[in-house]
Length: 204
Image 1: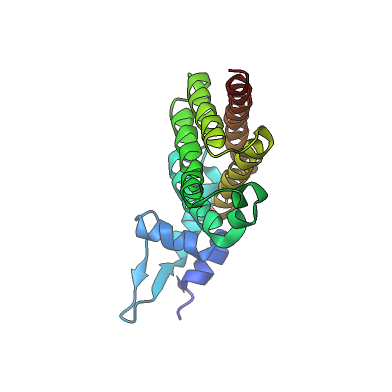
Image 2: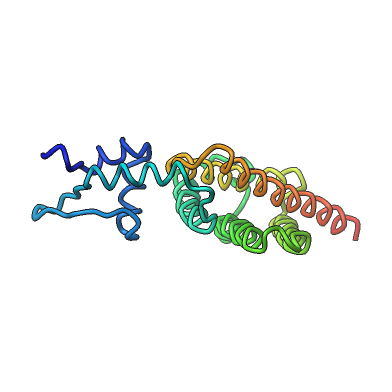
């Protein structure tokens, strides 16, 4: 291969990301790529080096695009056996388990709405999700401790997925931390509202 062209793995190494990330960028038309007659991807070295320089100088990365990648990681993590190992999850029947697998999507959508609104009116959004988590736990006879464990599980999966996507995209640490701080702030509000709602439902 000419030194002017790079394979998928070589381009990924130069960019400092996972090959699947390079493939995704190519599929979206964000990174120029040539496909050989044999179906192999080839990247022009000068274009990849320009991308690297551009990435270093970027002041922001669209949170929506990053979060879309993160949700794919969430789905993978939930289906790889981590969920089945949770003690609270083992107490649930088939219907309840299906509902809880959708809990990650609920939390993700709420976080997306929060980010899109730049943090405005986060209290009502967090309250709605907290109420849903609390009422679902009671509906399936989980106590407040198990309800909290369930929420923490889905929050951990979501935050770890965000971290992974930002690392693969080589996002500057300061910017990644800003996103994580906002995600933590929102999910903390959800958790507090869930606990408060659970206590109110217990007292009624």
